[in-house]
Image (cartoon, rainbow, N blue to C red; front, side, top):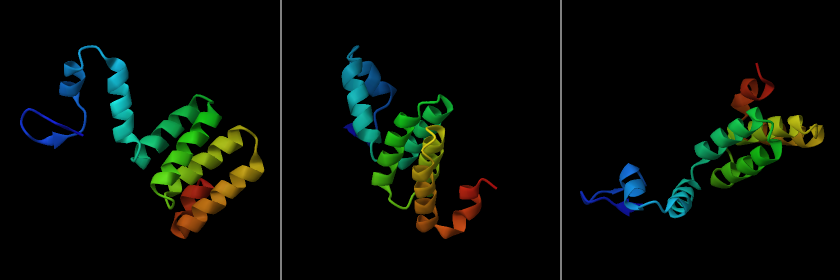
Length: 113
């Protein structure tokens, strides 16, 4: 988080990007550091990786989402889908079981119904 000229503290935005004067690497590092604790970002990226067939990358993103919230069902469901894509069915089943353990009321989401 940085201070904006207005004095408000806010996440990196267009102002920050423009003031970095082309140092894109610093911007990427700062943005990554700010986003690392947002489970939704990790699971959205995992979902994109799954659609691209990048299952191992998706599993890594699901792991990060689980670190943010160990009861986040979506992270386990997507992890299961990624393992299915890799044809690692035992690991997929284990992920789906973790999802059910985290929240039994999400059974329809987990079963795909």
